[in-house]
Length: 310
Ligand SMILES: [Zn+2]
Image: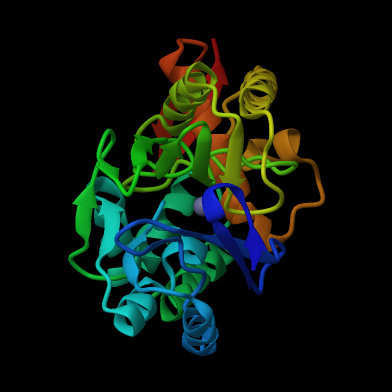
């Protein structure tokens, strides 16, 4: 475990993806430890957490989930079971969590990918994988809901929608526990999924502007190294997405083209099948932002949605 400001500890879990790891943070407090994010509910998650909990002086007061993505929420129920501590999560985030991992969404995801131009065999394969991921997501039912502005153990909850609609972060004296709101050198995925916000990129722009305004001095990130100049990183991410919006606009100049069609214009040709899940949903968040800006129009024809620049 690594030591950080305020005696915070960082615990890194392995992930079986290209993104090879995810961090949990353990925040000390007068009423005990707050554990932020949990890792995946892999078969060895319980054993690894038990070992860490044995090393911890004092009890766990609560488990805080920044957002419902599998690497963050996956072992929440295991950890709640091991510690007896309540799980804190945003209401909107929990609704998406319960929908995504508590029900079979394969058909909805396959339909969504197909509607945005993905060939059927690929859409089918990716939708099936989404279904399989449910096995390693043990979210906690009926969590304690928290929202922007709530305070506990010296930390203030700050909503940061964009990467996930209901993502919540924690701020204390210039230190932000950021989930996946700011990452470096990778950029957080900003995807438009069925049942997500209609404008995740617009939401993200507002969250980045708020980060610049709040000007934390340090972000403890969900992946990779901590960020020591968060407003700088927020400005870089704003600039990155403005460039990508321009590329999306250019890609549909001679439309109509689907979100799937423009993936290679935006992300290059080296995309694997697994990458396509993020590429198509991120292309879509940019195309829909262009529509809302009046810079593109969308049209549905035979159940397929395509975009043309205006
Ligand atoms: Zn995430």
